[in-house]
Image 1 (cartoon, rainbow, N blue to C red):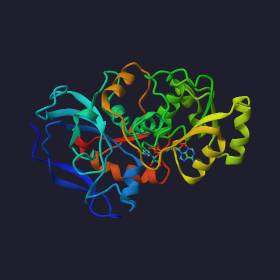
Image 2 (image 1 turned 180 degrees about the vertical axis):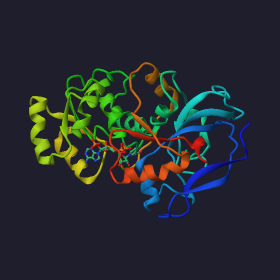
Image 3 (image 1 turned 120 degrees about the vertical axis):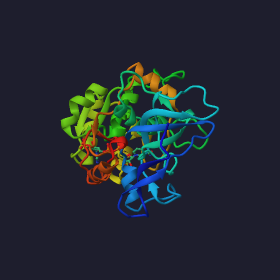
Image 4 (image 1 turned 120 degrees about the horizontal axis):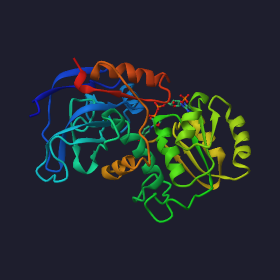
Length: 330
Ligand SMILES: NC(=O)c1ccc[n+]([C@@H]2O[C@H](COP(=O)([O-])OP(=O)(O)OC[C@H]3O[C@@H](n4cnc5c(N)ncnc54)[C@H](OP(=O)(O)O)[C@@H]3O)[C@@H](O)[C@H]2O)c1
């Protein structure tokens, strides 16, 4: 049985340092929810951006409890949940609110957003998946009214694997968690048939990004002008009809836009978009259609997260997703 209290990591007020709360209540799941014992939680730039004082419309309650993705073991299911049971190993998106946030030892997720972890994926790998894959899937395939999406046919829809065959794509920031997944951005562009797929990144990641599907890797320290001059040489003159900007700072957005042919499609990762639903993701992972991010496990449970976020803020995270294990908090 779950305890009644737990440790969580939060920010008491905008701009304040992270703090561990020792006696935070363990919530009860609603009828369509599950209660998850969090084994692994993924770190994302959004956490430090909010902590640093840029909550925008995302945070409605202080303290802000961080954590946008989690993997763990189901502790309890709501009365109407039929597809999960206590003891299932699962992963899910977290949330910007105290109930669904993942920097906790126990969290709540709607069963609809939960997926079982395939046998070939660890808790830590699973916790690296929801945000990045979600952001790629939403930006590329969502057809929901008003969605910020280029509306491509999804791989399981008609034309999803053939429509873009042989057309050129650019992924700016190929080694970021979003970019790899973006291995989804790279992996999804490959899945949809794009070729060539040109990624920008530090060259130390070139072999790895090629193993995910990039056909060419350009050094991200080159000027945008130099990168733009290289592109036609690498595409053999083919227009770039799809550009994915996994970084979405002003300079990378300009680069992606300038690289794009007239009428082409471009996806950016900021402002926020959304998350995919669970079971389809698990099927792709089991079938090895996509790979999870490379992960680095942080020490000291929740207490190790602030230092990890500081590294992210100072551009000291390179080609890896940082993961914390909340149960290891002392
Ligand atoms: N909308 C959403 O829901 C959503 C979700 C996730 C992320 N995001 C946003 O997407 C961005 C990336 O997030 P993330 O989690 O993927 O970050 P991350 O993995 O922590 O980013 C670090 C990586 O970014 C690469 N990088 C940094 N600046 C670059 C540049 N100018 N050109 C090319 N590569 C660059 C670095 O490449 P090298 O190591 O190769 O140098 C490093 O591998 C952030 O702005 C984040 O807030 C949005």
